[in-house]
Image 1 (tube, one colour):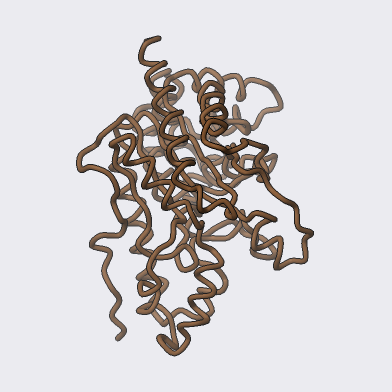
Image 2 (cartoon, rainbow, N blue to C red):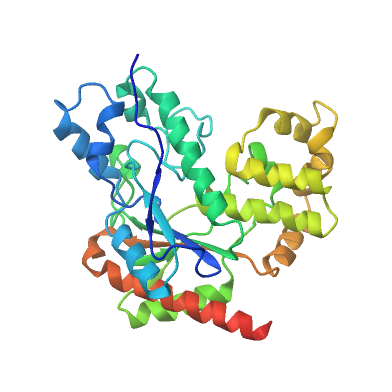
Amino acid sequence: MELFPAPENPLRRAGPSGRGNSFLLVAPHAVAELEGVGPFIQGWPGNRLEVAEEMDEWHDHGSGEAFEAACAQLATPGFRPVLPRGLLDLNRGWRGRSEAAESLFGKGALSSWALQRLKPGAPEALETWYRACLEQIREASAECRGFVEIHSYGDLGSTYDMQNGGRPLRRSEAAVVLSTPWATQRPVGLARLLPGDLRGTPKELQRFLDLSLERHGFQLGPSPYPLQGPWALSTRFLAARWFHWLKEQGHLPAETAEHLALLAWKDEQDAEMEAVAMGTVPEHGNFRGVRDLALKMGEWSHAAGQLGEVFARSGCFTLVVEMRCDLVKHAEKLGAAVAEALRQYVDGTCEQA
C-alpha cells in the first residue's frame, strides 16, 4: 500500500505569529517546491523535467514575493502553499463544475494532467491535504474583517488561452478581480444562495489601490476575467460572511446560517443543500430557510442585488489583486502598494466608525 505524506503543515506561514491585523493575506498560487509533487505521481523522479515544466506553467510567478513584502510591511500573518498549484489548486472547488472540457473556471482542485499521472490512492491523499489547507485558512480568517489574495497572471493570456489556440492579448499591468462563484443565470450549488452580483471589494479600497499602484510604478487596468468565477478562497470567506450577515438580519435561522457558512469552506456542492434549494425535498434541520433564500436570489428582480449592496456596507471585504507576470522583478513594489492601500482603507474606515 502506497504511503503519502500527511498534511501536518499544509501551508507555509509568512509574517508574525498570532492573528495580527484585521485581515488575512494569501498567495494561493505562489511558487512551491517541486519536491512536494514527487510522492504523489507515477514515474518520479525519472520524469522530473516533465513535472518541473508542468508545475512552472501554473505558478503565479512573483506573487510570492509580493505577498511576502505585503505581510512584512503590514506585520500581519499570511499563507502560501506547500504543494504546487499544478498538482493541487486551492482556488478551486474539489470537484469543480461539470463541463464538456476542462476550463480555467470549471476545473477542480486536481487538473486533468495530474489525474492522469497520480499514483493509486493519491487523489484521496491530496483531498486530505486540500481540506486541511482550507480548514487552516478558515480558522485563521475566522475573526478577520478582510481577506486578500495576491496573484500574478499571464502577460498575453492564460495557459488555457494558449493551449486552445486563442490569440495573444496583452493584459493590464495590475488588475482587481471581481467575481461571484458560478452565480450566473445558471448557478450551481451554494452559489444559488448568493446574489448574482455580490462583490467583496469596496470602491473606496479599489481607489486607494489604484493610486498606490501608480505611486509604485503600476497601472491598474481592467480584469480579463468574467464575472462568473471559481470558488476562490476569498469567495469562500465572503460567502461565509454573507450567511452570517443574513442570520444577523433575520433572513436565516441561526443554525442554517452557521451550517451554510461551514459548507462555504467544506462543500459548495453539497447534495442535500442542492436538493432543498431546488425544492426536490422539503426544508429540514440545518436547511430551514434555504428554499426561500434560493427563490429570492433567483427571482427576476433587483431585490437580491439590493440586499447584496446592503451587505457590502457591513464592514467585511475581500481583495484579489493580479500582477502581470512579466513584471515579476517589481513584485515587491506591488506588495508594498497593496499594503499601503490596505492600511489607508482600514485606518480610514476605523476613523469613520
